[in-house]
Amino acid sequence: MYSGYRGGVKGRSLAFEPDKLSMMRDQSHLEAVEAFAPATVANVACGFDVLGFALAEPGDRVVARRRQRPGLEIVAITGDERRLSLELSRNTAGVAAGALVAALGVRDGIDLMLHKGLPLSSGLGGSAASAVAAVVAVDALLGGRTSPDVLLRCAIEGERLASGSAHADNVAPALLGGFVLARTAEPPDIVRLPVPAGLACAVVHPRLEVETAAARRLLGDMVPLRSAIQQWANLGALVAGLHQGDLSLIGRALQDVVAEPKRAVLVPGFGAAKQAALAAGALGCSLSGSGPSLFALCDGTARALTIARAMQAVLQQETGVEVDTWVSPVGAAGARAHQVPNPSCAT
Image 1 (spheres, one colour):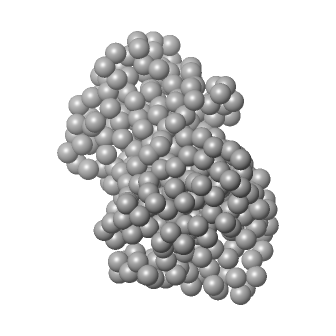
Image 2 (tube, rainbow, N blue to C red):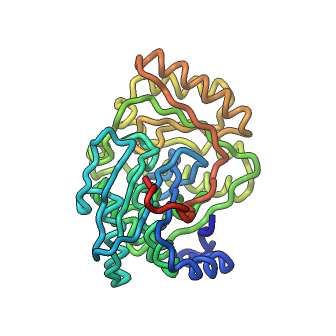
């Protein structure tokens, strides 16, 4: 692997790691590059549209391959059961990659191949992962000279297609890794937050689908002042808990009084699964994004595995569908890319 990104701790000061940037610039002759972008947990209970962190897995992959004919094209998609469009303007990866090519003013011929490792409409940042993997792959193919700020802006355009609005709580951690606060999406103002040692996440995904745009419509445009005050207090407490390494405060702060009460009905068994997580020792539990996936923050990966199994058992009983589980450190690495050894075999 030769690509890495890190977020600056002062708002927009996002930068490549210098040694890896020089390596990228040495690779402008590459014929094909594959990029991986991870799943993300957005909102994190009290941080609707502003908080998100990266998981170690699963994720989406995009191969960018040179071709003689100028222009950008999605030539193949796998892992989507043929549900996603190959048309650039109707695919988050295509929109993001198109925005990058336009921003750079390049006319190179590039084929894109997208592999969906993330379930569709899962609440795990699938549209963001596709968009981020696409811009990272195209940038790497072209030599890796683009600033993370530009990559982020272009990926946000892909996310806009999926959700109907610009927000960076999935895109930013998918690109940069770690745990981030997106103060604004336009322009992107991203703040990296510290992660206490050993903080882990259990994620469960009942094989149902919740469309982000539809879930957003459930929320309406107004929040009662009492709820807003409580949400602000929880958000401040969570950020303080992360900085202080105070797991108890983090747990008390993981309460969503804005989105979760309206969206919980979209996930059969949500309440019972949340209670199972807390009974098994979770610091807190809520919907991941708009659902149907749930996340629980935990003290250590061993406990996270136990909590994941507890939530899985409840959801399988309540929904009658298969339930996938993942356990990850909170704030894993972001997008990365590597050369494809045999471009003619890239799929």
